[in-house]
Length: 63
Image (cartoon, rainbow, N blue to C red; front, side, top):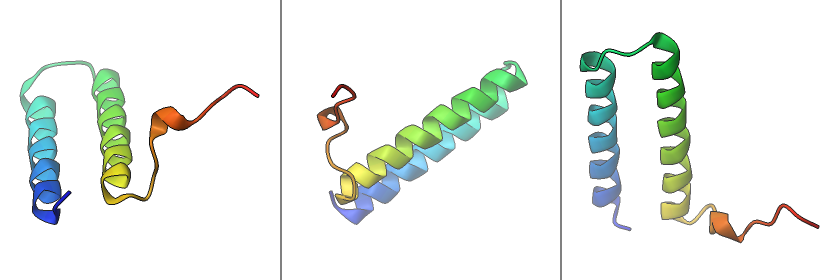
């Protein structure tokens, strides 16, 4: 993935998360959970995009 596309997606996600937090009324605890979920998802996506983390579906929990 080109670096420019990565930066554009990060900017879009950041601005949309800011707008959701700013203009959609919801409880503080729900906003916190939403922010954590979005940040973790974006971190995993960025790590996969740059090749530092393999396919997440390839991990097995069972023995």
